[in-house]
Amino acid sequence: MRVRLAGMLTALMLASMPASAGEAEVRAAQSTIEAQIRAFLADENETAYSYASPGIQQAYPTVDQFMAMVKNGYQPVWKPRNFAFGDAMEPSSTTVMQRVLVTGPDGKSYEALYTLEQQDDGTYRITGVSLREAQTLGA
Image 1 (cartoon, helix red, strand yellow):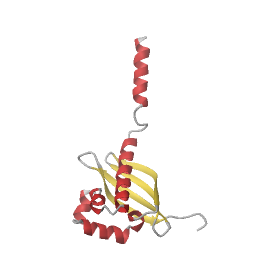
Image 2: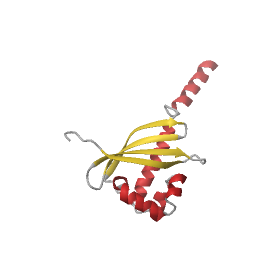
Image 3: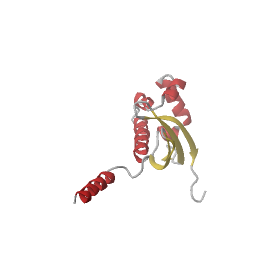
Image 4: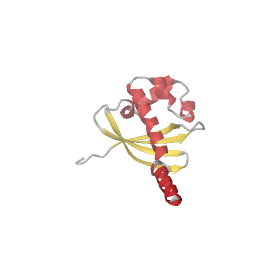
């Protein structure tokens, strides 16, 4: 009877854990991306800047420089009409790559591939975004 009870408790504990080891990391990365996009939409530039990795912040040492780069090269993620998460992968234990499907302010569809690195405090920060216009059916 004790073995059966212990087995049931173990099964319950396992059932409450994420299905895969990377699931929590992907959710954390998605949370960072969504928070930055929402900050862009709300014109909360300092908050949006806070989600950039230290390397990005070093390359763009002021919020104004960062926002100029975003506005000039990343309009679809700066002011999207909508967005949805696509596939994600973990090339290493501290890196998440997340595809985001975006409808830009111009109404066109885009694919943004975000790369995020886990920081010493456990949070994920954006290290880069590759953006391209998405192929649409009938195009």
